[in-house]
Image (cartoon, rainbow over all chains, first blue to last red; front, side, top):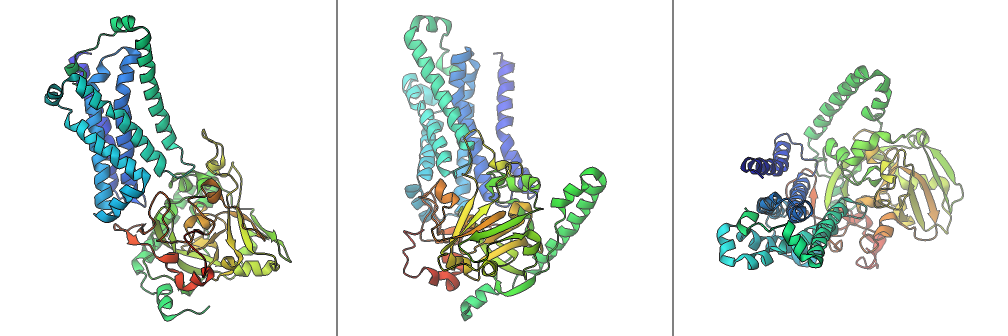
Length: 216
Length: 322
């Protein structure tokens, strides 16, 4: 993809991913955040984080399926934006929902499985965000870095579990996210199997771009 | 009922800020204006719009005994933030889709183990002596509201049908009609709940003076999203026990099967008394967010109605019979 195309795509992602935040800010100004604003804000931030996380996980399968290389260049941006929303989600939980009631929150982390998995996802995201720079990729080395960043799939799974386990019966939205994640994982398995069966042909048609470009 | 001095204060209270009442007046004016404008703009649909738009006012004596001290939850919150799965699982769904429910004609059948089973027309029910009672409502999802309901004690209704000695429970059933209740249609993942929605109380709970057959709130008939035209309100239990849009009450000798208990028995028991000590398996019930407030507050045992209802459960292990 051309330089301008890449810039346009990234600009679209920046705008798209800040849209929910804009909607929340506008809602705050016009006092239109439903009758339970803290719940609504927490939920919107969490959902946006999950959407961004799954989108970032969709980039590798997209390349495999369509043979385009540009999705890989968006992975880091999407992942970091997801991390940003996870942090906001977490901050609202601490500061607004529980108003720094540390003991109560800690009990929840230990006792409530949906909070336990949510917290694990957040903790696992930290090393990924911290090693997202070019410098860190070089320092770790490509193979190690790639292995570490496979954690993104675990985090995606934890995020979907977090949503599934907090929802009351009858609410179907979490199922859609679970299906999306299974499709993404399925595509990966399919791609892996395909490479395994016909390694020469696949590697001929799909030269791997250099790592620096992939995460750029 | 004997009310001790303490509970008297807690139930009665005269400190409901007048601004809440003014707010509602302004709201009603705006509503009337909007309804008028809508009627002019959309003449053919004017009647339908007004069916939900301008609600019939209700005459009710203001109960001095059953009135909590806390500030009322604004009308807008009470009518836009609802759990009423018959309209959809989002809290906004009931307000968004409420208009599809037709509340006339409407009858409520009361039968089962009683001497004089009877089917009441809704207009007959509206002739019971109505009182306005300001109750706390605590949702199992750890949020709460303060609502001025209008209704009459369930005991007065049950007295009309004369329960027999075998009657130990009352079962409540909500209307099933997927035309009027879009949430009752089959979705991609099946039904949200096993319709019809059923709930139940032990007979002594049903006869308790706090248990209210409810036909209105904030001075008017119930908006559809709040369970029109008739529901029960059981203020010391989690909100889902207060079944909405009722068509049937049945006196039985066996504990009725209740909807949420069938859907997830380990999370929602038959009793479902508000109890800060007994967690929902997935979240704590120790605190709650009062709608409109920033900080959580501590949840009270029996939602603050312990002085009135604790005796119903003496000797019972409420951790086991949650």
